[in-house]
Length: 72
Image (cartoon, rainbow, N blue to C red; front, side, top):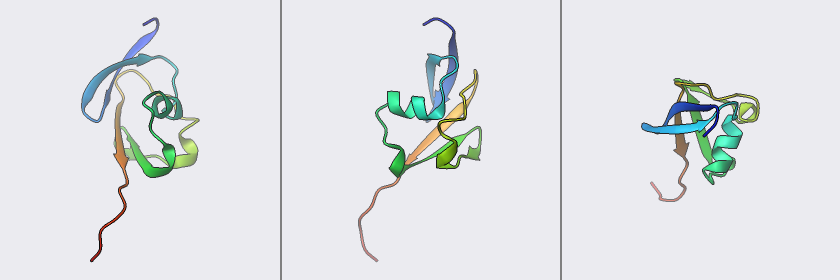
């Protein structure tokens, strides 16, 4: 992969393309943005920032999915 960077996604080492945004990462991973929260280097991102925040070499991305259901 040309201009590859090394990141961690949910604790797993990944090689990714340089210059990709969080939105592009989610799209490439086939993850719908409506039902996830994303933490980038311990900062929880506003969903509106997904398309603006670029992923850089060494970044740590945690993707948390919301699951509905259940009762109390």
